[in-house]
Length: 173
Image (cartoon, rainbow, N blue to C red; front, side, top):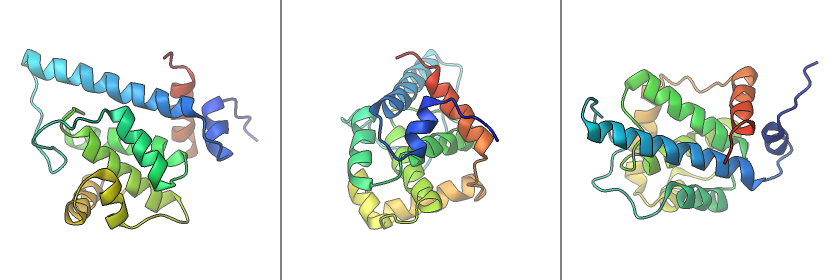
């Protein structure tokens, strides 16, 4: 039997909602966006435009957006960490970068997909679309596009999940 020492894992496993893991995850995403946008502005890299790109960056920060999704989606807390893993798989498989132009749409899509895969109860695409500030049709298209980019491989091993929990545990805010 494996002894789990990760505080993040314990808070997610027990269904307790600790704001620290969510804030740490938001911090990782915000830092990634800043780093990626500096990289893109400096010139040497190309970010392919996808269905997840908006024509302008939303006024709401990633942290505010994640807080909104958390408040209204009733997803299990694990969905947010799984969504982060899905996002990394997406960029690994397809290239591109997380930026302020695609982060929000990717977040609502990945969290919805994670909820459908993990949770026994979850809301409809129409509900997630409303929470995310997109149309139902757009939500449907983003879900299908995302699933094809991941080749429908949604399973996350316990070892990988724990690795990401440890990453959050060890992160300084």
